[in-house]
Length: 108
Image (tube, helix red, strand yellow):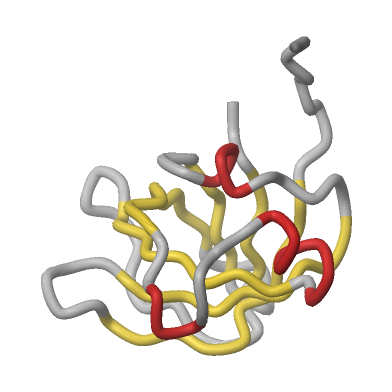
């Protein structure tokens, strides 16, 4: 099986966010544009997060997938355009992630 290298980033919008109990954030995302990644590509991916006005941006790393939104699968992502992820801030930068923020990636 050939490995497909994706050069286009996917763009997601944050529908909801909540602070995770042991650090990081749980994000409910809706796919908006670009090349939709697979769940395998999202696992441990580095993503760029930016505020709605573009003034604040930082990088996060995907830690996993919370199950309260349903089992993550490629079919669910492509059918509904939604995925729930648990992210942790990279290098201690960043701050609060809120609704309507833009998430793009995976970063190389």
